[in-house]
Image 1 (tube, rainbow, N blue to C red):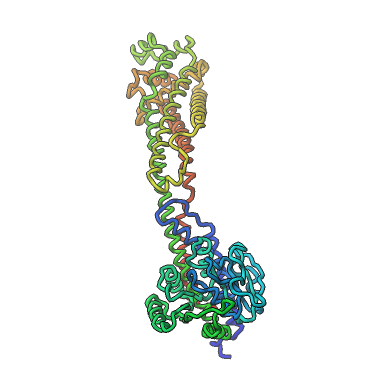
Image 2: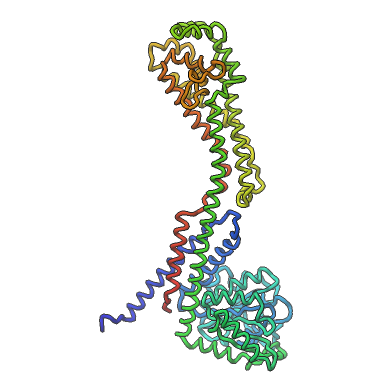
Length: 597
């Protein structure tokens, strides 16, 4: 054998590898679509969600089953408008009433799938249309009219598929009688769309009066975009008008990219006593179906065209969904930034209030002055820094008032500031979200414009923890200065609240001695600490205490911020968009390949 020639076994092996790779790709696409979340109320999101559900359904109903079983019989779905005569056509094709037809609308509620008995294994399983459970139907016997054939309109739910084996159906092709595409029932229309999306081949039935209607043409144009093999059956054409009407419809088909569609014309004919059309009226359609049945290469070509076109269409849907994910990500980022900006402003205001002397007023100032005294001690400070050490020693030996009142006042004042700024941030974030449709949807009926009920207790606990941290700094610094241990023994708490007072005047790196806030309050505190620890140590302690306070305040605000941000969640974007774009490209490539049947 010429090395350039390939053997049948090598061709089969290569085809199997292509098939395996295709199925793997499609399963990856399915996994991504099943996990896709588009929660934000953005323009066009409903269409994107519908597109995702449609793509997922078509993967399950048609694309994956067909790629896994390329040799399976063709599924020809008979669809069309209300009253077009679909069920009457199906009955005529098999030569007996098998599906109900009549004047009551909608007639077809439960789809009926007719197949040759030899092809039964392909359809009794859930290979195609897995969401519809199987019901075994029986052939109508005797002279049962079409008006009583098949399943009664209200007799069964539309979640099932009636399977009827009939030798009149050629092997290699099955007929599925679908509900009306323009039914008054939403469920009927949805089921009709699902069935048509699962078809290898469409038998699209319309009438001389309805062939230009918008709904059928929307579906036909979709078929054209996916390169689906379509046979259009023009039913109930008045006698003598066949050529004129058929020519007009053919021109429309050509204009809309469906020039390759088979066109069959059924003239207006009276039905017999069983509600059947004369056999001769559908003979050309039966001959066409029989030819498909007998032509394995022709069936393979239909599979190739429909499958590739549907995969290319899926590629476009995935690409569009990638754009929708990016839009969700961008919108989510904007909502998150709005919240973060509101709470960042609050953090800035808290930082300012805890360093510009704002807290050194009111109750804090009163309790501080009670603690240090305002008479002899202040005059001692004014008489000269040289004697401060002696005065401080006397101050502590004189048993100063307990520092606890100052500590409580600091806690109360600081708590009020943090709660107030947290509330303002919540209100700001809530207002920003309510000005955005996506934000309003995330908020729903919840009111997040105030802090959570547990927030005040959380603030109090964090402030007490910070005060404990400040006391620990004093202890650690005192332990390093053994000569000052006797002063520390007189009041770690006292020195701790003094350090807090200094922190609250720590504006722009300046301490109380440099800005003189609240009538010398912080000046007193700084001089007391400097007399014990030294100037450099006081600056370092104040910076450490301020940083610790800022960290705790930030943590408190973040707990309120999370009430908003948790609603945004993960909006995808980034890697998800890249994955979807990559899958869309791979699908486009796959849609250009020819599956081997």
